Image 1 (cartoon, helix red, strand yellow):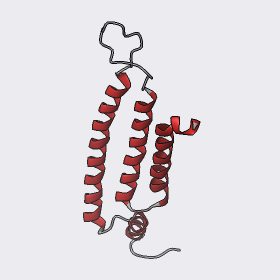
Image 2 (cartoon, rainbow, N blue to C red):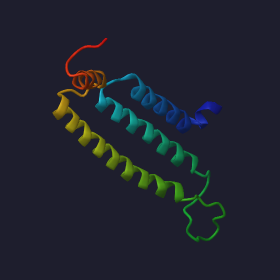
Image 3 (cartoon, rainbow, N blue to C red):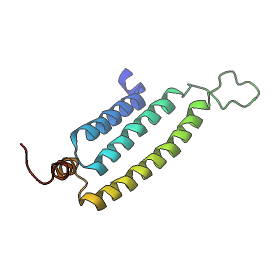
Amino acid sequence: MELMTHYPYWMAIVLMMTGFYTVMATSNLVKKLIGLSMFQTSVMLFYVSASKVKFGVAPVMTEGATVYSNPLPHVLMLTAIVVGLATLAVGLAIVVRIRGAYGTVEEDEIIALDRDQSSGGRNDE
């Protein structure tokens, strides 16, 4: 049962690989942003899981406590959550603008439309 003691780490790895696969495999820009968000969430889960100290208490001077948990990773991940949400919001706003300009959020179609515009409508291939 040694495997179950590292359950949060395995979940972080599964979540990370799922997010990475979503970013790499899909051409839909919204799905790419969701994959990036999943990847970022897995990193946060990993950091918070790694900072847990067995039998540790909050770093408050209490009688009899000898092992303290470090609150710094938790505070840093709160900051990362705020930055991640802001980045996701900006990314979604850009996707809305792209959808308005090109009429699609599929990366392949956007590249094809850009090629057609830059070649003046003629097909060189």
